[in-house]
Length: 317
Image (cartoon, rainbow, N blue to C red; front, top):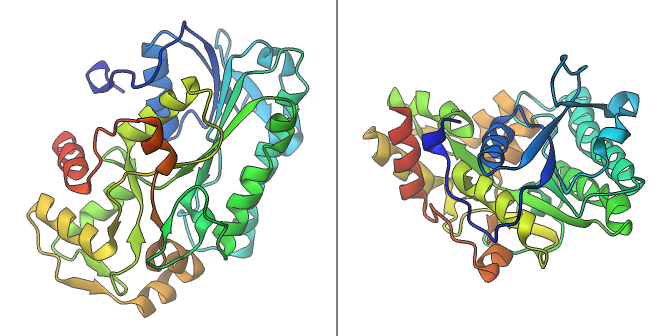
């Protein structure tokens, strides 16, 4: 991330810390490690390949149960972002197993390793997702809402429970339930831009399914905020206050691009093309409220979708 893209810290600040990050090469991890480094923290990446000579990277591989435990000693915080993409293709049985294994087994292995350190970190910020809530229609969902039905609900629940060894060891654990992260650099937004730019963007299914989203800048800010808020633990919804329906998202994206949005992708086409994955990610949704963050006073840079899209699309042009 170029220095001009870095946002100022938005939480209580402490002296520089030693922070370990998994999934550091992904969309969120790249932005987050850049910001934390710019703030003066000693950021070390946990990688699943042998580190190159002179690198500060730390080797780990949950599939082979290998981790450099000595290198973990003395860390102040761990941010765990690693996990197989849920939107990279149809959910064949093998892919669903990989999604579950990368999240549940990876988190369990890391959490257990941290719990047995002589000097464990004070906090573990572990990624989760709003898929925890399943498809709930118009129901407004907060961190107090129960788990929903379906594959994603089950995976997210197991994913969060896999942090239990760290929690029992006295480490403050925060499960960051993230919505759709919007960035021109990657993720869902660039995939949407091509059809909209060609004039074939439009409502998916009935259009009434809720989309809980978050700008990448705010998501990175949330992780920084949670590092220092010792009063926050357990599930935290990392979504913007301005959740929208698919119909509203379509209208606002078309407005921002100055392109028509008359095209309609019917539900049966989504199910035919993408199967269970399309059903869960495109036809179902969650109306999620970031209750804990709002109560804690987190200041969103982009609380509404129109301002978030204007910012992201302005940077991509």
